[in-house]
Image 1: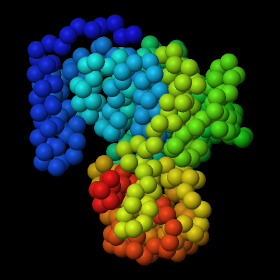
Image 2 (image 1 turned 180 degrees about the horizontal axis):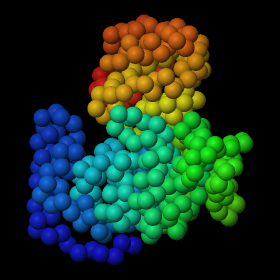
Image 3 (image 1 turned 60 degrees about the vertical axis):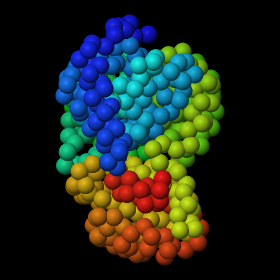
Image 4 (image 1 turned 30 degrees about the horizontal axis):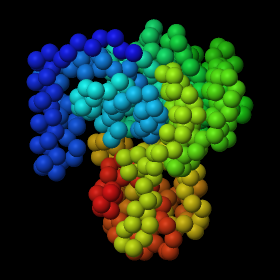
Length: 412
């Protein structure tokens, strides 16, 4: 349990109140949840507020390129078996958004916090977490984020000597490198479908050898550690070798991997795997992701894919051809303005699907699909795409701001 439960100072209370007021004004003006502006106002009044709000909590931080929002939600659901939880469930994962979330958790025991990759070390310093879950690292937002190996190095430096239990994916060499500076690591075999960011050794730069699911560097000896927790088909194998069935309403192998890491985190706090996994079944959607909605008389499943690794996982869970697929890509600030990543995605996996393309960067995506030899139609908006799509449920895949645009259009 977190030991320091000193009451908030008058300054901190004022900062919290002002932040909530700013958030309320933002919501009333129709500018979203207000969590970011509320957090910014609060931190302006008390720069140390994040640490003060976390002092009574057992904090769990979750960071990754893909899956952190879903895993945060799964961990939060599992830990509710042990006590009240506060979490930034809507994905505002920079210090301002995290501060807003914790401001509403005065009665909570656990703080389950998703953290943007760039801010992990700083948030860890401020909140003194009990557990940090590291899931994966791959290329994303190339105009704003560091190259993946540099980011892994920053994590390694920032987490060096951390007292937190690090729950880390043993199948991602970059994650292993980042976590290896910490004295207390729980290794999880969660898999790694996307390998194109981890062919050179993060320790020495040599070429990685990747036979099957194993990996090692033949030059310096850096290699995959033996995992304590393993995703095995539809089961989680715990450190004692017991197999626990995974029953999720969320689709795909990636979410089974997220559940495996989540079970390992919950176990640190004494929640048994069976209890943790049963509670995870209650999660049907995460901030609109995986929701099935009705629109213009059709069923649409909303899927988020922000980078090459995410698109690869998403392609693996959509219904087979001839299911129609709508693709929408923007390149606004929250997405990253560099769309060169489109060329790293293997869109040939969509062969046989009727494809409809929209979004701010629909022409960039159209060029990519043309080179991939796929048939598609460019549409002005979602309404046009849905009206042209052949019968059946439609899979809708979009990157971050395009996804939010689509949710607003369908009233989700």
